[in-house]
Amino acid sequence: MFKYVIFDVDGTILDTEKAVLKSLQQVLKEEGREYQAEDLRFALGIPGKETLRRLHVQDIERVHANWSKAELALLKEVQLFEDIKEVLEVLLESPLRTGIVTSKTRQELMDGFELFGISRYFESSICATDTDKHKPHPEPLLACLEELKAEKDEAIYIGDSIYDLQCAHSAGVKFALAFWGAKKIEGFESADFILKEPKDILALIKSGR
Image (cartoon, rainbow, N blue to C red; front, side, top):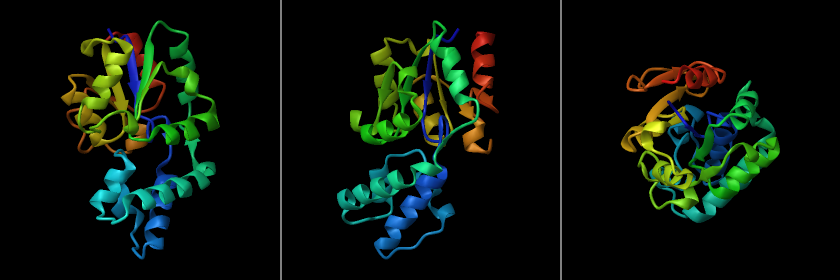
């Protein structure tokens, strides 16, 4: 039976895809490099600085700061996924304990969560700035388990990217695919559970699997 529910943020709780990709396109264009949004989708689910490293950006610190500002300006395009807040409310009132493992920085997480007033739903939050290694490495998820004093077999990690799946399984934790964010099942054949909508989280927990 699961006692701990740990969430990814982008593509799982917050629908940030448009804001992330549009702001990344914008800052890269300012650097004289133009990309189609589809060519940048690999950036969804990994830390921003890692994205810029993979794109061979020279001044990562400066460009990352510009990207963060550009994304902040597009917060109006970010939305909570439908029914996710209601699900979090139910979890808050239950004995279950909740956490966050995200590739966002601490400031990026605060900016996003403050907009929707949902920080109170989570006991632990591990951000890109909290660990040396990042998803798909298990370190951030293991750090969250440690903070919650959770056993691996009592926890489930819910996310939308292949990095989330790899992080969970490397940490020895079961993984549930947030299909509402991933929008595809291909590549997630090894997921332990497929959740088609946020309310499926409650059904999974109730089932006791």
